[in-house]
Each structure stands twice: as structure tokens, then as C-alpha cells.
Amino acid sequence: MHSIWQEQIDFPVYPILKRDKKTDILYVGATLEHAVEAHFRKEAGNAVMIIEEKSIADMSELGGIGILRATNMNEFKALCILRNYIIKHHIPCDLEIISETSIQVHPIKLFLFMTKDVEVYEQTKITSRQGKRLDIESAYIDAGQVIEDDRPREKRYIHIFSEADFPEITKPDILEIRKYKNNYLVLSYQRELEGSQRYWEI
Image 1: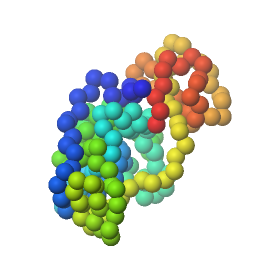
Image 2: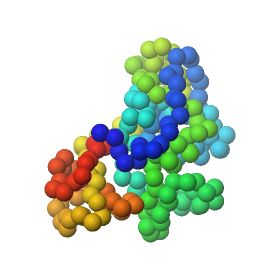
Image 3: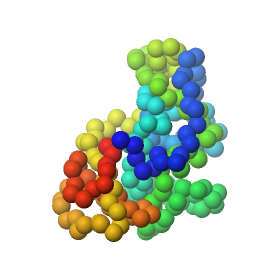
Image 4: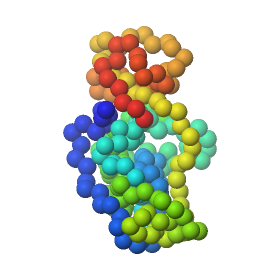
């Protein structure tokens, strides 16, 4: 099922990589974190690429619940840089500042802005590696650095509740709640929550 973030969004046409490429930094996986980092690394003069094995427009998990939070000093510095950058460049991503260590954004709007000058390829999967050379079946990528998020994750679900019908939720499996327009978005390990209008998996 598609996410609320995908509604009324026009995605660019992302190509499938079919020829050899060379880059300073390769990000494996179209995530909001990779998009933000790739944008700043490109501004610093690095050649950067993002590859994703899925069709990006169909990725309901892209951006999660749209809350970016700092849990340590390095993350806090990065969050401050991003927040100030969004404000300075008037990025239309529905920024809301929750606290010094937490912001809310429309994750796909921010992803699209941060990747507009970055090479992004979809339906491109790494099949094997030989040192810094990555085989993607139809071509090779020579990357100085490969950055990927290979942390194991449990399935999680974002549920939509209308503001008028939002129940009192005190279950321990609720991970996050955010208000977005006239809805509440609830992040949970549970696929079924009473009163949920619909959900999507991340």
C-alpha cells in the first residue's frame, strides 16, 4: 500500500544503470538519510551516486514517518546544519521544528529536493563485488567509498487516524506519533490497530 507521502507527488524518471560508472561515493539504497548526505557531499565537490534496487516511486517505506531526531552530538550537529539549510533555501518540505533535537518534514519532498542534482539509479542491484568494483549485471561501478545501511530491521507499520477519531493509544508497541494536516500518523510494530484508516509497511 502506498504511503501518505506519495500522494500528489510527481517523481522524476530514474534511469536503470546500464553502463560502467566511476564515483567517489556510492550510496546503496534510496533513503532520506542517504539523499541528505549525498547532497552535502556533492556540494563539497565529491562525485556521488545513489542506486536502489526497487522502483523509487513505489517505495512506501521512503522517509518513514518523517521525523528526524538527533540522539548524540554528531547527529545534533548534522540536524542543525540540515534544519538551517532547509530554512535558508526555502525548501518546500513542510518543515516543523519540534525541539532543538527533532524536526518534522515531508520526507519525499525533502528527498526529491536533495537528490535533484545527484545521480540516482533505480532497479539497479549489486550482484557481486571485487574490491571497490561492484557488479550490477549490466555494468560495473568503481567506487572510492560505498555507504549502505545494512542494519537488520523489524517490520514496522505507519497507521493513519483522523484527527476527529483519534483514540487514546497507550500500548507499549507504539513507537512514534506525529500530527500531519488533519491526521495522526502512528508508527507501530503492529499491523492491526483499532480505528486505523489504513497503513503502510516500512
